[in-house]
Image 1 (spheres, rainbow, N blue to C red):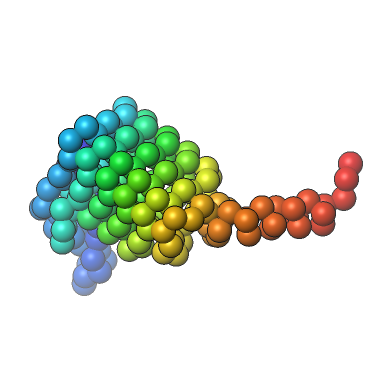
Image 2 (image 1 turned 45 degrees about the vertical axis):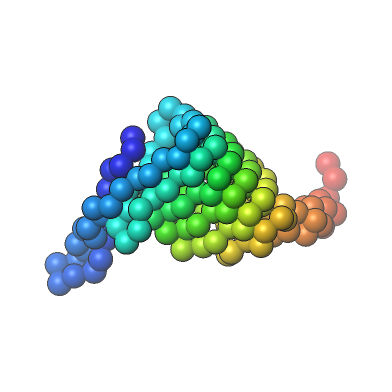
Length: 150
């Protein structure tokens, strides 16, 4: 589904009011969008999927998101509203990226990672919260050492 309202609400005297989302989704050339992928239209800027992006099945792209050129995104990934993803970013399956973040150019994000902070360009990240991959591997090894062998 492309160009639906995103999940945007504002507090009001009755609880929550729908935030107007009346802008567009702009899709570049040579973009592939898999089955059951949703891309929400923008509220304060257009949602953009730039040229050469390849989106697998079952992906959620929130309102106001900008995906740079040549991004590859695997299934069951969600990019929350108003996040900017740089050029040639590779995102593994089941990754969650929080709202209002910036992911630098040529970043790689390991599957099942949770991104809650901006990511610097040209690095690989993994885990929750997502950290540089060498730190994620160290954390994983430390946890293994703490767990008794069976």
